[in-house]
Amino acid sequence: MKFSKGWGAVLIVMLLLLLDQALKIWIKTHMQLHESIEITPWFYLYFTENPGMAFGIEVIGKLFLSVFRIVAVGFIGYYLYKLVKEKYKFGFIACVALIFAGAIGNIIDSIFYGVVFDHSYGQLATFMPADGGYATWLHGKVVDMFYFPLIQTEFPDWFPIWGGEEFVFFRPIFNLADSAICVGVFLLLIFYRHTLSDSLSKEKEKK
Image (tube, rainbow, N blue to C red; front, side):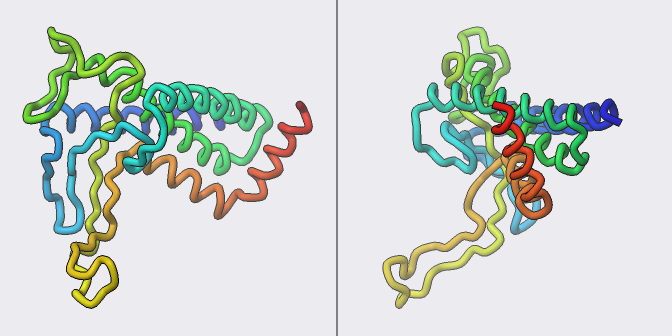
């Protein structure tokens, strides 16, 4: 049983990484920065690059963020291994695997993309360009592409502060890795909140 749960977690991680990186590489090599493709009126593939955290948030330095991500993924990977070893429910393991896969997906961009791709400003990026990439190791930018402007309108003129300005919901642009993290966290909080609390308490007691 432990074997099947472990390989189930591996399958989730590998499948998500494959899809995430395949889409990012396609976007990077087929679209220029800030180019968009309309799939429906409320769903676009919009190519942007994020030097910061999920959904384009920028708070701390890039190098520190990359190193922090690597350390965090190490802890999540170890935690996932312990869950499989201690035979937790597969649904709980799958949620953590989603978070783990999403974190790795964005780390790959941060570590490698600055070296293996050139820039996308006004051109299609080249894989392994002869003149080198657009940045150094650990300074790559995360590729984002999912844009869902579900509501596009303007605030009425009488509205305080933002009167007459454009209003878009949902504005953030994100990628598959971000989605995996958010779905994993959401499912943990909804269905496995107590299991998460108990497992973390056990880890603290062992220390």
